[in-house]
Amino acid sequence: MLQRWRQLPLEHAVSLAPRVRRLVQSLADQVAQATGVRPSAVPDAGPAALMDQLTVMIYDASAAAATSTLADDLASLRRELS
Image (cartoon, rainbow, N blue to C red; front, side, top):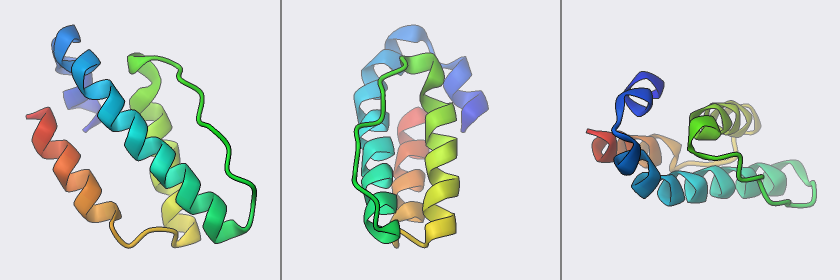
């Protein structure tokens, strides 16, 4: 997914950025809830950093067993990147 993101035309990446940000924040919120920490906003570091933020949140969510919809969320995002 990272390679595809980097290959997207800038306009397409910018148009998808809010969707990816929502997913990143949703994962962060689920991890916070699963681990008992206070939720906080994931900083907006721009489209270039979104896939790195998503990668970290996927790892954290998997480690915390925080979401049962992760596979579906990622499959949906992958289809949108096509």
